[in-house]
Image (cartoon, rainbow, N blue to C red; front, top):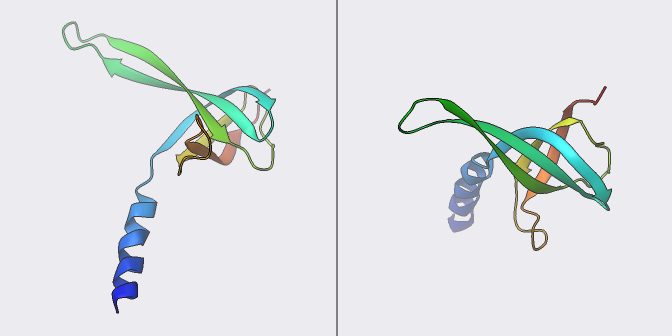
Length: 95
């Protein structure tokens, strides 16, 4: 019975992982891609929207993504010193 409760508690946490959409900026490493995720924040005082860019390294097991592709990545356990994300899918190929 205790194992069933642990299993039920683990499932919602897994679905609560963060997902981001961004553009691949580098795929020069083996099984690793660099993804630029752009967000728009509203300035506290002036109200103008500001673009903020964050570069994240993600695990690409099959090495299917190329530079310029739009991809969806999901938060995961630490895979290396800098990798905390993994590739979910390539939503749009580069033209």
